[in-house]
Length: 248
Image (cartoon, rainbow, N blue to C red; front, side, top):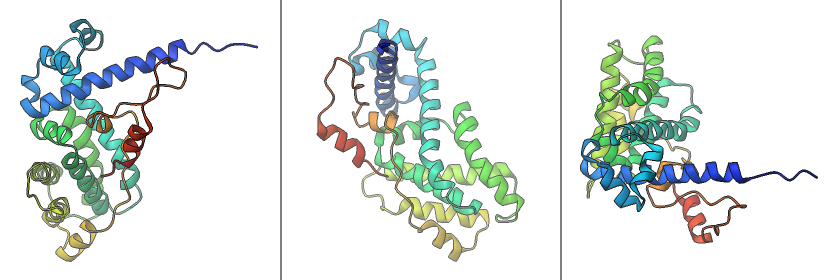
């Protein structure tokens, strides 16, 4: 009988957990201080690792922030896409995406703070998050769902609304339905009539689950479980329950 060697897989999973740990530290620090002010010393001190460990994963703080932004953008898209794609109306898709991202960012201050401090002109934001929005905005403009306007203007309406909703959600006293109000206002600005915008923006959304190995859980200090054949003990049941209970 052939005995499978699990060591390469286990080693790869441990490397990915360390990368996620560094990302989580950088996310927390960048949300507080801004991406440009986040140093290597800050990250390794927060993560409790040696400088050499940092350089095993990133060549510089700037490279780390860039990779973090890409990872976070991809994660938000992966979380939102299953819900967004359940509807065919581009206005509903745009609205659902806005509400999901605003709520995730508002419920997880490290993520919200990072997005607020990351410039919308950042190539990662332009190339991933806003390209994701452009798809549905372009479709809505093509079929006349939205008023005639330049696509860039439509993108700015949505981006500004999401950023404003995220900023509000991070502040004490923000109305709990602010993402819905902001999304409705954006739809009206895009040319959707007020009654329809209100109906779309308050329609119940399916639960959005965080990725098991993603930054949302990592920002809460919940790292992925050790593989079953790893020497370390698995996290307690309470931690696993907490991971399952996180909802937007």
